[in-house]
Image (cartoon, rainbow over all chains, first blue to last red; front, side, top):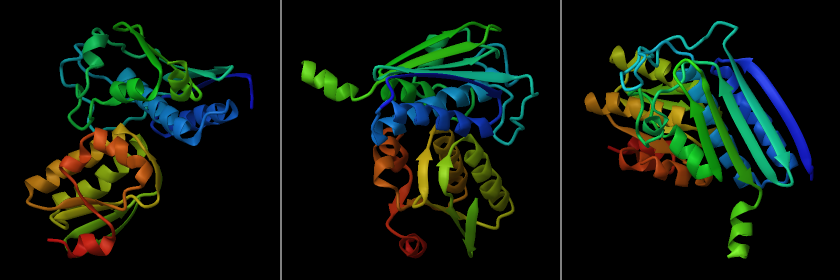
Length: 167
Length: 109
């Protein structure tokens, strides 16, 4: 089991790279001793965060997040090559930290966007943040219009067992 | 995405990890056939699926709205046990029927 590791990855903000980010985080979580079930949870949370960066971070939609955007499911999600997403993954003594950072359009009202079933697109479920929250131990979202978005999540290996033992 | 048509029924057999990429494939395959009236019913066999996220769930529910609006049926086949809690939390079983086999789905009415 690896006590400590750290990897940062920057990639073009295209749908095909969501799977690349899952692979990276799953690999580091596996090295750090996370169980298969825990790795599945981490993969889901990362998939949601990176998808948000690709779909919402860089798509041209109304400035007000409450306005339905012009993004459509059939639309072209490919971004110019300079649109990048950065994923930073660190593990230390069984604690996994993942940061997903984009330089996209950002959000004015983070609390609104984080409500379950709220989405700027009817084809999307609006459950991304809810899934991140329920599958990780902590979730922090830092965003402002035009300033991009930083999502930081942590999870401890065997977290539930350790917590139960402490109680 | 692998699929097969049985009359007016489309059987989709996605595999691997289903995210934004697979969601777009699902939309392309199903919406084209639905729009041309080539299919009415849609079933998705999840037997070979290892992962899915809310992008794919959203695409499933979006297809359900279209299929149901046209009076068709839609269901999931062989849902992996590990994904059941996640799909339940997302409320998918409230609208989508579930079947043990493709045959069971195809003979249901």
